[in-house]
Length: 133
Image (cartoon, rainbow, N blue to C red):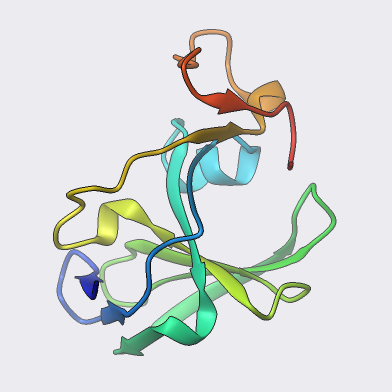
């Protein structure tokens, strides 16, 4: 199944030509910043199945997991779109909120629950990990 998505202003568009490996809610501190205090809803996908059109900007950092991360966003409207670890050339993350249609995309896992605030709704029906699994 092919899925499409993009940023809020439409300057960046992408096509995903594979199903995600995983859909996760992430409570790491970095994702909380990118999601304005909430968990990020992320799809882990094959990097070679994503085609991006438009100009991205990015921010490089060292994640608490130890990975060298590049978090990409639209340089025009600032929509957070992708995350990529230099140590994982095969996979990348797409922010689910950027999909044109998220039908059928359902989180099955919650990660970095140790970083979640006390008020965070942690669904007991989902597999949860205190840090990176």
